[in-house]
Length: 275
Image (cartoon, rainbow, N blue to C red; front, side):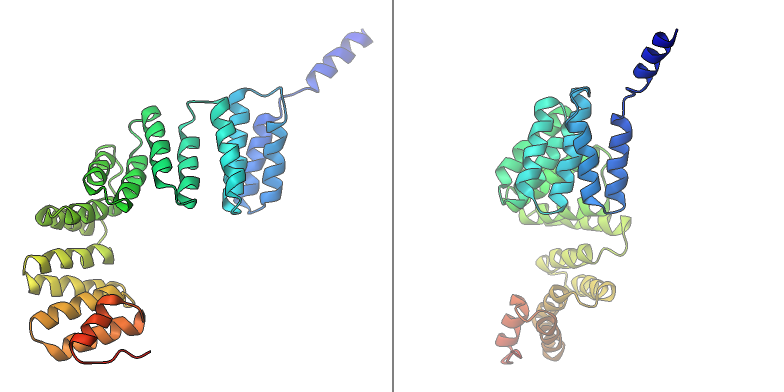
């Protein structure tokens, strides 16, 4: 009887600690204790009793900690090992894309987003991120398509509409861009960037009063918005309102000494930017 009890106790003592270790790792991340988080994740990674999926999750967790610490190569290695253990791990592909972006390798990042979207075709935020990378590469048509896919997938916050507006503006679809900026403003009335960019679109159409109104609203929302001052200055200049243009160009350069439109405006008006 004693032997049977001993065996039973021995079996009971081998309880699976993987889920508890994972939770402890996540809790350590939450309280900003990366060393403890790595320790907990490594208990799972080093345990051959854990499933491939559990170890992949621990590798992903440790990789995220390394990434936050700026150890991008270690993070990449962990994400890659996680994918090797669990090839359908969409989140790991997305995380690896972020590392490629940190390494200034946008094409590789797009490839990672492609793989993630093959696994999760309704992941709206991934379309959004891929769209931003394509816009960075000046592939504006593809970027606009990705932003539209993000919206269709339910990821339709103000930033997505603003970014799609930017892409459409670069494609010369000014009226479509204005509609996107207007939708962004409807969603987030405090979107200073959307007001400023819509102002640019209005100015391109010669709708200067509407442009002035949008630039002014952008400045109300963000008093340090140098580009909005410079843009408003350009409209004032077109309207022959020299004093107001000069004041806006001066303010733009005060806020950002290298603001190119502000400095160019001051030069055109015969003023000298303060060093």
